[in-house]
Image 1 (cartoon, one colour):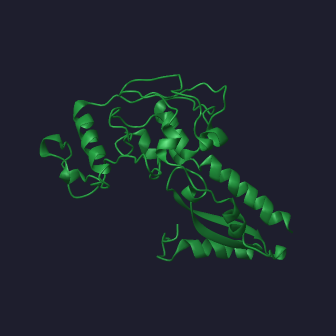
Image 2 (cartoon, one colour):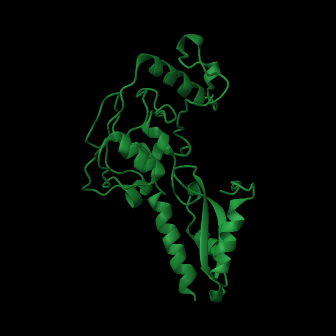
Image 3 (cartoon, rainbow, N blue to C red):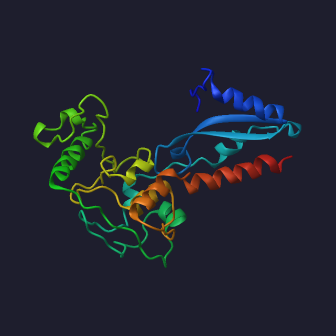
Length: 250
């Protein structure tokens, strides 16, 4: 959005802001990283906020939003109470009681039932690649496609999309969850080598900040698309509270 140019080759965002200005609104914008607000995912998105010029606020909206900053937990804390499953496996029982303050606060209630914790099946070739990718990740590196043994490479394109396989890190937050996860799980390999699979709908939902009692309708593909396209609910709520704080002073 910041760099997009229209058919005339001019930046589009300033034009959008200009149109709002003509309508009597001032627009502020900033790139917001969801991981700075408690979401277990590095997710940078451009947030635009418009308000009537006659309000003349003392602080910016983003000054109000920063008050809701929160350190995100790690993937390990996020997944701790979820049962271990193998590729193609599933489970409807939690592994243990809630042990993470974050999970108890945002994601799971005592009477919740575990749903949609079903792992994709993977072929043997992908499973071998997953192991290599995860072992490399544990050394602090990402394995590029051209560094995968030739006998495991199935794509002829070896000049672009070299990061098509990527593992999560137990000791950090996730990289951005996008709707492409609906097509395959190669970019979201579970950090536990013993499970050796891509993440489930429930795990992806937790990374995005959806509570466990939120059930995604239709197919697994549809569920992954809904998750990848969503604004993290935890961040959404904090944005809403910041709007209330910002306008409440007027």
